[in-house]
Image 1 (cartoon, rainbow, N blue to C red):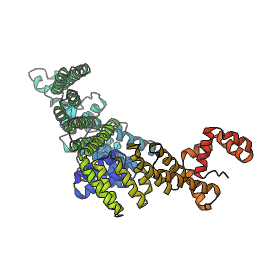
Image 2: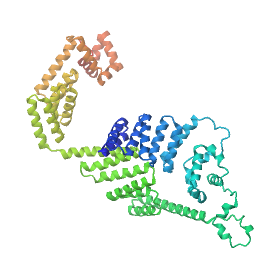
Image 3: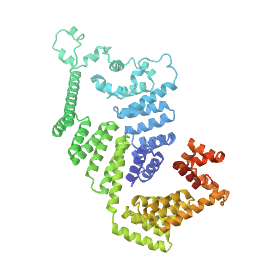
Image 4: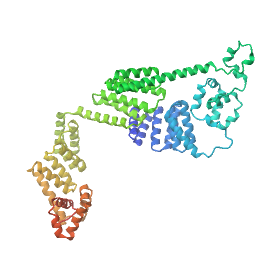
Length: 575
């Protein structure tokens, strides 16, 4: 049940309904209070609502539950930044990058936080060490690990503590400059080769053993030959770069084959690229795209699942993971044969949107939801049961049990949404219940389904009459008479409308009723257009000041129609 609430929260978040997302995530947290992802998601929703205090509380809970999850520190940094605490935001992002140095979202957040922090701080104090800045940033540990000399220092607790102390306060570097290891670290970080201060470090090098057979000890000291260990590391790095370059070439060849619709060749190239470099999930997502084009939907889904799993391990960009999920959702839609089959596709699209909000993915989600609804209607379609429900509704209508009748008519429409008679009958029920807007909507749907069905016009005209929109009711009854000229109910409706309009012209209605009718008429766009038409304004002035010109205006059919419209609406009175 927690997963269902989470899925609803994700969907609401993706649609921009952040209050609703908070509500669903809260329900999920009640059911699974130890799930760190739920607190993370709710923190993001709170931040979107600019409720940064609540976002901070949830972010702290996230890292408390899962301290080794980098994304939690991203939430923490965003909340601190929203509260204008840039220093804490920087610390949070840096902690996240220690866990996931390649995370682009954390890098972007750290850059924003540092910019904000620089604005809030004054100029650096005098006497600050110029080396302090090089100890800041997530690349510090990566550089120290890559260098063979400093890599061994990382096994020494006092060395790690020394580096952490300098990170906290860069000015403390002056305390450690006498340490030979510090000079080596500065050289690595500045990419400068530093000479060791004593011969002891040189004697520990593997080269000292190779130098022993030489009889002249004076020649040992100046030999600056490179150590074998860095050469091995360089060779490994070179090999990795070479394989990556080859993998990218295979990817380009696969892309070219894909554009030519040579799908089998494209698959071969993408597969080879994966074998050369398993640190890039784009090869998997590209191969999944080929399988999708070939109609091999199960293979596509398998590749997408692998891409998501591998992407999580590599902490790949959220956009890449979202792309894999979107592609999987597309394949699931292609496999759907009934409304239930759309549910996993919809869930997959919702997950993709939580990773990255993409308009194309949102459109695919909306299309899948619409297709599911249409299939549900088709699967529920049964004209025989619809007729039975309509008859039950008719019996209840005769017994004046209108709410119960509405229920049966509604069920009949679910079973057969194309029956105009049911819409007509339900419109009559709504009219009896005083639910005039609902009755009008059903009557219009009835006419839309069967324009020749006279009952639709009598239902619509009756609703409009009760709403005191006599001019509109008159038009509805007259339109119905075009299809059924001898319909007594329609003719009675016309007479009733004309009588009410004439009462208005004679002034036989109360000022309150006249005011109410005019207020409703003024909301009609057609009436508004007539009154704002400069020509019609002049016509109305002539009716008051120049009767002769007014008579000429009445010879114009269009002007006459508009005048009649104003008279019917109670805006103008002709005596």
